[in-house]
Every structure is written in C-alpha cells, then in structure tokens.
Image (tube, rainbow, N blue to C red; front, side, top):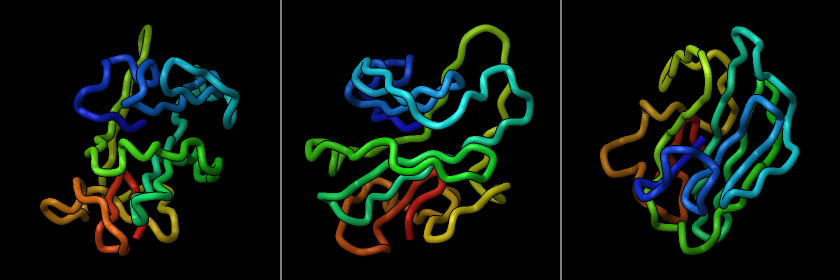
Length: 139
C-alpha cells in the first residue's frame, strides 16, 4: 500500500496509510471494506499499487491483482494533497515478498514505475502529469 511518514507500521490502521490485504479487504483509518479478491496463502500473487496525484483535488489509490486493475480503492482526503506518500508493506506470520520499483510484471497504461520519478517529483502535488509519482504512478 501507501503511507505517510507519520503512519503506524500496521498499514490501514490510521488515516495516513492505505492498504489492500490478502483477505480481499482494503483498509484506511482502521476501517476494513471488501475489495478485490482473496490472495492470502497464494504463492506468486502480484499486487500492483497505483497512485494518481496528478490533480490535487482528485488523488486516488488503486490496486491490481495479477494484472487485473481492481478499480479505485481510495480517494485521498484534501489534507493529504501535499503530504508525501511512500510504498509500504506489512504482513503477519510467515511470508516472502519481492518488491519492484521498475521492470514491472504488469505495467498499467498511464502510470510509470516509481523508479522513474525524478528527484522531488514524488513529493510534489500539482496540476499536470509531470508531478505524478508512485509505485506505479499516473503520468
């Protein structure tokens, strides 16, 4: 998911973090809602985290599961418009993860890998595509 530096380590349990979990739930602010499909316990599930910050008043977070776009999970509140968000992950029990910020297995049209963000770009909010950045991020 995505989190501000002030977020708790357990994603989705405060207002500054946004998560999609293996039990097919999205969460933020401690509120868990149905979203996507169950992938808990499945090996080689590929989760894409999409952040669109092109427009300060319409910033969104979406997720992908094995290449399928699950749609908008969160519309960011106005108070987060200028707050930097960072890729974040947490889990329970035994698990292994491979993080990619480039050479994405399932790229999304209109987004680019976080590794392609220019210095300072990932923390700026703005009105044009050059200001967008993310784990995949809108362009």
